[in-house]
Image 1 (tube, one colour):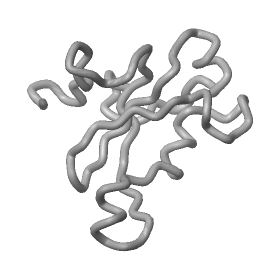
Image 2 (cartoon, rainbow, N blue to C red):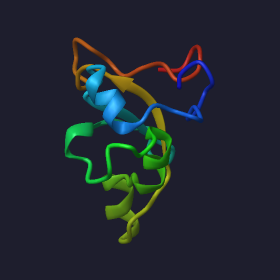
Image 3 (cartoon, rainbow, N blue to C red):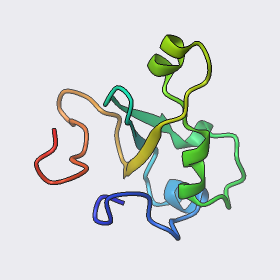
Length: 98
């Protein structure tokens, strides 16, 4: 996903990503520029769902609270093995961005 600067289509299925060890999906909100991780094992979709189809269901909590309705402006960045932390920072989406 990072190489194409956006969601890769076709992307792996949800079950395939989990079997490969990718437990998290990194998502970036374009409204407030925050990076968040979503645990793939709690997503309530069939395991045959492609990862790129999850983008339409992602909502930024901070932007939704400001606007007072569910606000969708997030993009998929990368599949991750671990959550975002101080040791493992967010992925660089475009060269030079941080």
